[in-house]
Image (tube, rainbow, N blue to C red; front, top):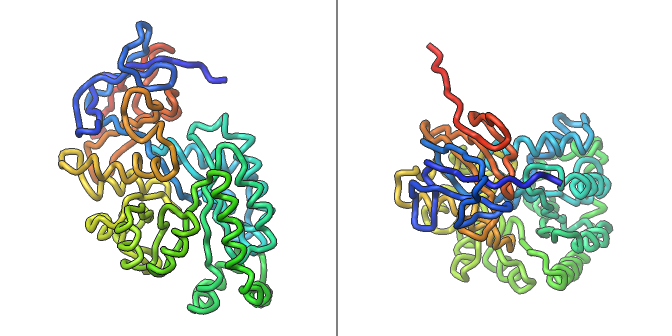
Length: 397
């Protein structure tokens, strides 16, 4: 069990629900407090922004640590620990790992998911980031559904998202562009992959019943249910009726509008903002945010992106920065049903980050705190166990 240290952060610009305030912030017992503990350790945050920690509800960047090259696999626990370091260094304090359960063998197989989920459950108390599960069930993975349904009872409850990349592969010609990538991650030849795809497609009449059954299990268990890649307002309506509370990566502007008109959250990828557009021709996330059609940004496949996307969309001196930061903190926390984090309010978890925004195009996370524990520190030195102060930075001439 980790030691509990009380903290007092002073001199920083704290992002409150009203905007930035130069004030002090106290942490006691891992929670934000209105009272400063007598023996609190001091953190000098002069010149730094103090922001709510990033809540990432959809990220599968960890797959690169497991399989950095096709067919080259590393130990899952090693990969998760490496991923954890990336997360906290980029200001992510809560992460839902997007574990794909597909009909494919290899990286996204049921066996691979079992290994990853077992490792997350075994390691989560030792990781810096509050690490949780986002089960990405491929709706054609019919033989795998029973195991997915059992995982829905895990604690903390996983998010469950219904995905269908199979129909697009068959009907929209996606397979022609991605057959090499799909076959490689599956450990199959192209011919073997196509044969397997034909077998899976032949069971398409069973899919709708399977979706309804798994959605009912999610509702009964209290899991957050999402629908991924919705292609139309009609599809949004279909999943809404099943209990899907948000639209994750809608494929069309009309679908995003249909969700927002009903007060539902729309989730898009932060890399889309940082890169200036989608890598696969989907909605432009920057334009969607500006139009009020995106309420949550996630890491998707790139952990630095939520932090950098927020600073691309606004600046600390702009009046809308608080609303922009909500895209990566308060709003995803709300979607995930985590009302104990996402804002710097007394009584909530001390999940926060200290950011040097001297270069707004390249903001730097100087420290990350999760439940009152410093899990990442760069540029802050601990002179002893009870004190943390800024280290002088020498200029290189």
